[in-house]
Length: 476
Image (cartoon, rainbow, N blue to C red):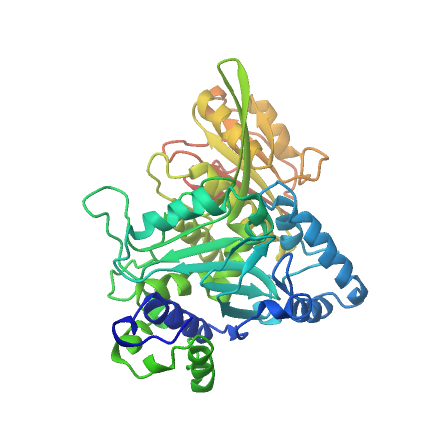
């Protein structure tokens, strides 16, 4: 990159990329420095772009007694990333906590967060260079692509480049498989330019085989403040002037250091910096990586043939805030509540994410969570069962009231023996009114039953010793 001069003084690098990179240091990321391809094999592993030194050091820190397995784990990761599974096997390793863990999800401070720019992803003669790459413990799990405002084609052009050139290119498979979150921004507010779908703004997605939808992100702002509370009140670190000058120097942008436009683009509430804070601040990013990714494999019959769809999904921002709100309300002692949805907004997907969020939440209280998904129509039971199974959850059903009551009497955490996460899907319409009370044995103190109601009109009458009316999500 040559030094910007004259009319070229402000471009996508100086307007968006450099301010974004400096902003990351305010969030706690350490600037790693510019990484040269000449350091392949020493500083970083060219097959995966994993920072070797950082990875090996953090592996030893997080896995005392297993330090000697670091190189073996690195080799295993390299092999997994070659799989044509959208990174499923690597993701399983990434989110595992035993016997080896790559990330400490419970204690963010135990991890290291680094950032750099223009880090080449290369295999054979094919290559691409994300504008910004983010690392957790040396693992390149996020990249950010930026464009200058009012760029030709808007973010539609960037979407087409990802979906038509990068995702389908099998030589990039390792780099797509290891990347969990991708951000794209031209530092503009969302604008549909007269259409329905925004073509300008800041977007996000996760990996795909051929096509991934670009999602908008809107930070929670119930009070409609000029700056959303999370963005305004985040505990930003001061910009280290030495580090800032190092960043600008590495990318030949020293000339913009005191320019008013650069200083404006350093603001915490620019569209690019806003989505970076919302999705890449360490605690949020760890939450999204652990709970916000779903692998969905569905089969359906089309013209007498079975078609299989294998996709990787990432939480919508509404689902993220719903999940965070549920945890907060539980901390406040609430036992039930309602999450309002519009049709097709992903109720079942949110329920899938919540099974993992709440399983971990109650595990910290030495309780095992047991889930029930309640619907009021047979077709919804079949649809929900298929969607849960497609995401890898083992589905149990209760076709009669007596079957459900028998499950209640059973204080075991799981009905099956597969070891997979489970959920019982129940069609309430099949249940006849029965005035006889059901007397259950003493409730297991280490078992937490969680009911997720598909429709707020559904009323559960279980005829326990203390009958309950439950809406939304309820715990008993």
